[in-house]
Length: 141
Length: 114
Length: 244
Image (cartoon, rainbow over all chains, first blue to last red; front, top):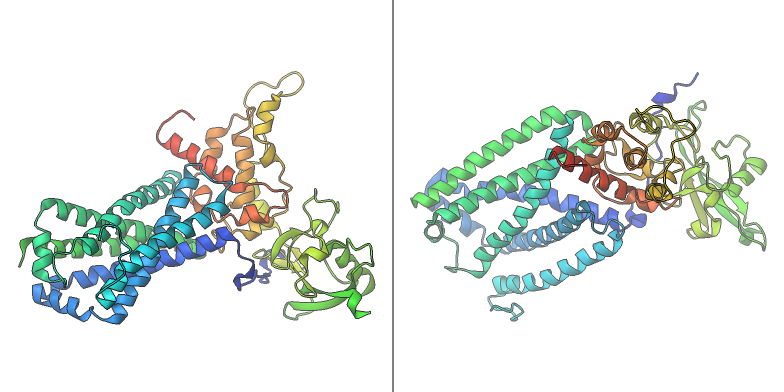
């Protein structure tokens, strides 16, 4: 008799995301950005805590070392990740409040639109950071 | 994992999320749109961190973001390795405590300004 | 005539053959001018004309028994409810067993993990009151509130589609949780507290990450996430000592 419970065989769904729906994309992006931000958080604490290891001099040295194009690009990626994670987080909390559970697709597009709009504002600040001058997209500048 | 613990972890994740939206927004704004100097230096940061309010906000940000982040890692890990709950929780609590103490000490160094 | 056929790509696994699982292609006629061939009928064609050893489950052929849930061209569907024309990718329809459940043979999965979790939520009416003379009556309005959850045909499509706790066979899953809410919201049920305790933990509602794969995969159009979110609210209310 074949032992049913111990069949090791599983059919797997597509690893390629050709059939992912809005909710699945929202979740995967939320998860990936979340894990990335945790990694950054620990690095951020380590880098700020250089004062623990060598006082103000060590801190200034660390900040100098971080003033390079790669770190600026990393900050841009971080900015996008936090933006998406935060705004999709609002979407998730709305679900928890019972809002939009039957409107999840529309809400996902809303998340992308709001993230995109804020990203455009943030990009102007980054362009100023990288090139020294930037188009005045930010209303308070 | 008892019933209530699971539900408290869940609601705390939501509460810290809302707090982070506000705190992180303020953090971002202060660092990028209220610049006191061109480059970040120890003396510049120390001067800004002199207010008790700043220390409280920054320490709160440290604790809340660590809780939200590490609890998130736990939620992710339990999806794929459901049996590691206790050891994983313990490891994450230890990481969180060390990071809080180490980062908190750094903040104190800034306040003392030396 | 090749232009009148399509390729039915079927997940094959025979534990007695000792061979690895894999996909096998069969050429199936599209069903002439009348069209309207369902994936289940295409499977029958293979069974009758090409391989009598093909194993799959079915019963009612009209989307009410929930036996023929499969993974068809990348989506969770009932084979009897799915037109070949809607499942074609190029000239191929791919049919797999329900993902994440142990495969017994070909398209037949072991539903044990599904039923085990289904039983955990006590999927039956509990009423401590004295038995009434005839039956426990419910007003049409009260009944309307649980209509959606009561529509479930237990096909396990949502259970198999849910990525929350994907490697966790003790996660109750969307089908069992929807069933739990069907009784939590039932005006005749008296075991609300007990039911909320059963689901209000991290193997239950708090493992749900609101991904909505269950909602998109449900052949009956049920919104499982609604049920789960309603119970999250009730559990939090109970934790805070509020009136349920």
